[in-house]
Picture 1 (tube, rainbow, N blue to C red):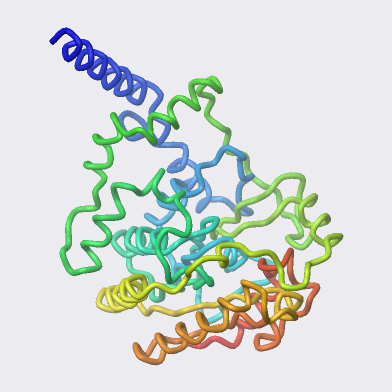
Picture 2: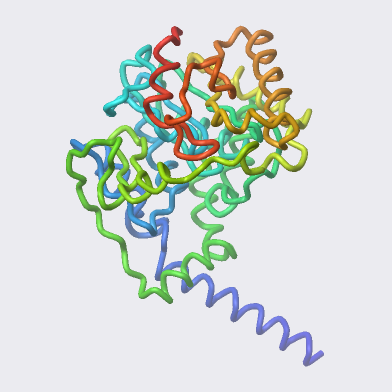
Amino acid sequence: MNYIFTLLGTAAVLVISAATLNWTIDPAGLFRKASFGQQYADALVASAHGLITPDSLDEREFKGKLAKHSGRYDCVVIGSSHVMQIGSARKHRSLPACASILNLGVSGAGIEDHVVLSWLALTAGKPRALILGIDPWTLAFGKDDRWRVRYADQYPIARLAIDGKETDNGESANRWSSLINAQYTRRSLGMLIRGAATPSIDVARNVDEDVGDKLAITLSDGSHVYSAEYIASSKRETVPIGGVAYKTDIAVNNAGAIDLYRRLIMWARDHGVKPVLLMTPYHPNVWMLEASPNVKVMVPIEKAVRKMGSDLNVPVVGSFRPDVVGCAPNEFYDFMHPMASCLAKFTARADF
């Protein structure tokens, strides 16, 4: 009996300690103040040339907060780092069919990120078009777990909404459950160890995006400018034949995920927003090895995307193949990230 009381007492102390820590540190600003992500998002859309991107920026929190501004834009872009160079506030402007663009791309975005960010954007406002950047791994579940840290509570609510079971936006549930949430506690502990310092919001100067600046920049449309060091180093690197297997070495074509994505598209259209499917190309060297995991995945996935577009009467822009979209080898940062000039080139032909 003493053992049980000790166990229960220890559990109670741990829960109370976690709640106290999360209430005090509050890394996402759920309880007393606007989070840094919200402050950064609000400052970004008001900036002239964007903001310096802090190393400690919680990318998914920030883009979730940025989604609240979606109603101010003609088009909203969802996807991974492959679409982060798409924007309307850039030297190489993408998608001229869009009067203005809000880029909500996050690194390694999986289908779960697509669901939550699309839901956040369309429940906050009504852009004319939702540009969905499809990657070779998008039509499968569990390809990137980073969404769980930020969207664990919002994802099931977004799924219900897409299934026609509208609820509130889940902020209240997310807020109070975070007091004892293990992932939120880890974030609080991390900030406590680092001294709970809040990163600063620093205005970026006007730079040549092809050259970059000392630090990475997030432009006012949410698109990304790499640092000068990264851009210079990418030009010195040789892209291996076949590329590197990134999320393409295991199953990437799941019937349940495809069905969910189709429902996401129909849900967006039911909300009066035009869905557009977008594929970004991989470096020509990747396509020189047909047996590479990347090529073996991209061929059937592109067919599935085009079929989805045809079945649902949704425009499909771009291709995984650089020869189809007209992008040269020197228009890539690496084997899978096209430069803004490449994206601007083939999206210029899009009409929707």
